[in-house]
Length: 276
Length: 332
Image 1: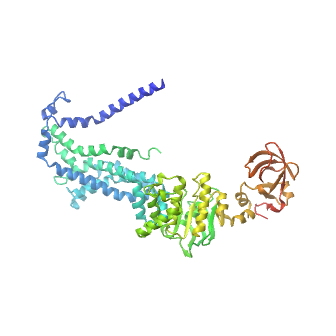
Image 2: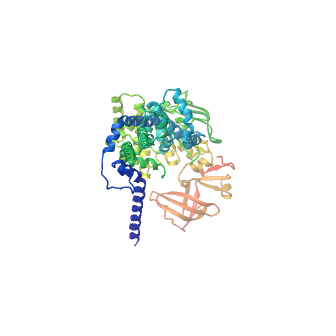
Image 3: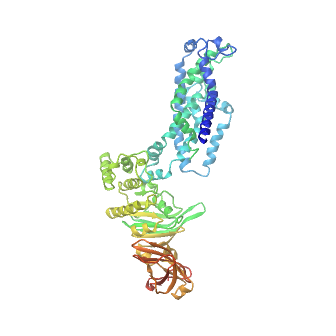
């Protein structure tokens, strides 16, 4: 009897998991479906789910109207650059917080995290002025720096959590073996933390890829990434739901594929240290 | 060369002074064992010598030069950790080669030395494995290999055998002793196990609460413990401590008798008692005897003695081997 209860419970769990998963995924699915509809079908009432005239027209129109490749390249550069730069800065920071903590380390970590609780728009004005002053407006470099700084607290936090799991004995052994601080971080700590660093890279790449507030406010035509590309289709004049959907699909597709192939790393990254 | 001198060394964590001013001279080539109960500061003392902890005050000299401010990487010492602390992402070969690589030794020389160390330590068959694929004893050997390749001035061992099972521990104890005889390099060894201390050391340093209680050769400490603490800590089974009238009769407020210095008989003797637990090992017999007016006394007798639970036994101490202590616990 106990066995049948378990099977029943399993079935319920599976059904529930699928239901919740579909619910969360539905907007994305709807966007992808809409991108294959005509503009008229896209706003049809009642909505058409699957039985419409499948068309690729939206994609060709979007490609004609704007240069997808340039936006894509900007996205890759900004997301990749800000993540790499962030990790390079965060590794030594996380090292010192994890292995030579001071009385204030916890406070500093919390303070860093608290900056994420501030609405971004609160610092838009000063950052905008700084960008004008340094000639960084609408530049890929400027965006890379800003997004790196925005995500830095999360990168430091994640790496700090991973580093804390590494036995300090091994780092001390490296010191006894004559390793300088640089060698210790380069040859011992970093290779041991590779899984953690990989999931940090991934998560921050995704965060940077999806970042829209700063990219929309600090770019115009030149440095805009894919988020700006999508936004250019949500115009108040006219109804372009299908084209907007096509643009969105093209923008999320690379990150969706990346996420799909690295889901194991991501899940591990997000739950690491939660259970011993 | 590996002469290490501690001068008035202290260490505090916050307001707690874990090492009180310590002076100690370790000669080149000595095998010194720091022994004491847990929390006595023996590991901290080793870490101070290694440079992994900073001293609060005092000086540490290595080969006559003040090393107090020198970082661990530059002290010329090698350390074997209790957890082995191998690099999990490197093969055995790379683990052993790491200190040489850090010292900038050239590749052919590194390979030669690593192969030699692997041969000496019976690791040649495992040289390309990762630490995760090795047994505890093999990991311990890799840790030792990593320490010996760079020919340090002194080896520091931090309870290296406590993660091994009893049989393996005995073997590794021998191997480390042999290694000391071959290399003739200074070794400092921390343990809470007095058997390891007695069997391996040239010189034992007994620590309690951050203070050195006594320094001396193993047999010295066994024969002439300076106080009750050392008397009870060194020797296995533990020394019997007798107080009260029975002690006064033997000429001191407190008298210590080692279990092997009590003669046991079924018929006659000085003290009468009843056997509680008897352990028959063949080579020895351990008896726990409830002696009248004295309390529980441990006895170690050579060979097999036919005494069991509930039997009456008579005990006679060997008077010339008694340890007498005054009221403060110091040896008389």
